[in-house]
Length: 300
Image (tube, rainbow, N blue to C red; front, side, top):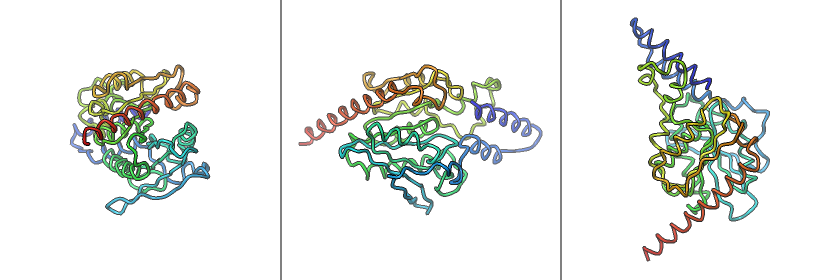
């Protein structure tokens, strides 16, 4: 929860300065974006190479910026495709082990660096810019995988918040997986010793309101979290699950990995993690295919 503590402290300082006549608004917004994203350039994790079989390329944006992407194929021709959205601090290279693990589970994997990370256009990222980047990635996902019943979105930590925002807006997704994801930035701040202060919530400029958005998600949902997560309390996984009121109970699940910290769900979870992801994807694909078939039958 280190960035929530730093964010809360900064909010208290800025408010104190404002009380004596300093505005601090632009400084506060910029600092929050730095604290939340902890964005990393291409030099960070450069010692970790892209997987040999990865296609590496850029996705252009309308304003001329670029979003760097990796695409890895699974062995089977009919494999489903997963859009992977990484968390803060680590770029694609720093997330390579997660990406290749998903590939090993039988998924083609499309993964991106948000602008400000890795080889994408160097900017100070924001919730708005990262959201735009994920939408561009979703267009690429649709190009790569024409079958909606085989399209999945997986978000880790901050990437989970972006996955929820994407699924709340877009159709044509078979299922959504979120790992170690928070309900909102203000909720994280409330977990600190300054969280009781009434003005703290009003000063947050990057909400990432996953709890509010997840009610608009209708796709099957898998929520993964470690019980020893010291960054995002695992109770937030339960709150996200409960708030996903648009997902039928039989198509949503919470899996808690005992003893796993914020980054340890895959490693500590081991075979239990693998089984959960595979079983979820298989069930979600069947449901999406049946829904598409029923829709086609109605049209005809």
